[in-house]
Length: 416
Image 1 (cartoon, rainbow, N blue to C red):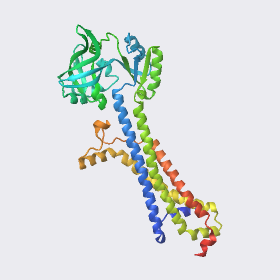
Image 2 (image 1 turned 45 degrees about the vertical axis):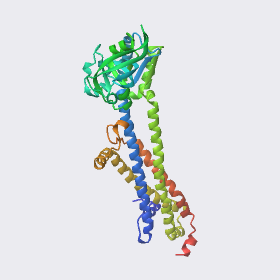
Image 3 (image 1 turned 120 degrees about the vertical axis):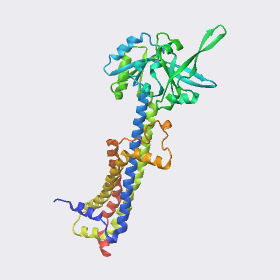
Image 4 (image 1 turned 120 degrees about the horizontal axis):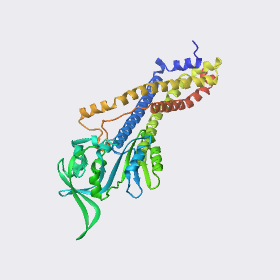
């Protein structure tokens, strides 16, 4: 079987011998270092991918793919616009809504909040908030019932439960016999939801659209239309096409623009963590320099004999590059395998650690996740980590290999 001489000698040099056990030990340390660096890099990237996907799912459960609104905050003849929107091939469903800012009060506790007036049957097709009730029922959300749904965070802050009454105060003043007074109305809590997003659970109040229209005095007008699209990754294009089809006086916003800062911060954090952990792999890879330099010093006699037998300088260079590359390949292989294995089981491992130590590693109310540590292994990340680790390994072999290539044969043989 054909096997180049450089490859054969390079593989032989990676094996341990009694007189060079210190070299073999340093080589083992370098291999373990590369393995641990690759494990850490793959695991951290997978956890960040899982966190991003979990967060995206939470957001898309609350925020529509596309939102259509009027420039003057009122859409008249909205049924015609809604019909035109639903004719778009990418639109799955739509839901009109009325929005506004209010002050909510109960006993001596008050808080700012936002109201959203909806048609429950249509809202259920674009959002899953109505499916996340922890108590109460959506069926009580009927016209002129003045019943509302609030989030768990707001319910906890006000100290209320299903069946209690709270007061909503419209900051827009109304003229009365005694002057300007805020508009107030008492509503009954029909249900409490847990959307999984603290801000939404603290600030959002959902009611029937007819009740919202009367409370905000918008009459038959609405604030906007929420749209669910076939392909959420192309929602930006659908938003643009819908705005053009509706004509002037409208503006559209897709979910990526609405949450641009959040997802940009996550991507930036992922890049920073990749660079930091890649440096860890780089430190482990550059341990090969000391390994190969010690190997070169240990093999000076062998190098001199090979040179006197007619072995070329490039051949000597290839021998030590192959030796360093093999150490890197072994470390990368085991690191990739163990990194993927750890990433796929990280949630179970974290849950076990929490049960043993009695602590909570990731507070779900803060980090908005359902799992202890969600993870998603992407093939692109694994390939990138392996490629960069191998490139750093090859880079670390250059100096020792050139030193071996330039070693004078006569000087080495003098001490043999």
